[in-house]
Length: 83
Image 1 (cartoon, rainbow, N blue to C red):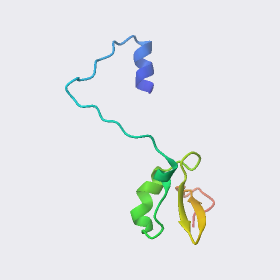
Image 2 (image 1 turned 90 degrees about the vertical axis):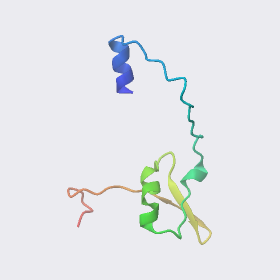
Image 3 (image 1 turned 45 degrees about the vertical axis):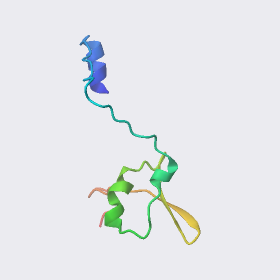
């Protein structure tokens, strides 16, 4: 986004997209995209959990009839929770 703003400010002319390339589209995320399988290992789920937004798209799973959400936070050596 900062590149687009800089181009507006310096009046750089836009470059048309290559019309010979087929465009790609991704569907809109839904809450179901944040559901994870609790039977998989944490290692297998890590990248999916890491990409979730705990505010808008929290990772969640169902276990024993209850719904749980997961929030992942990287801990630095300065954190009070660090060993």
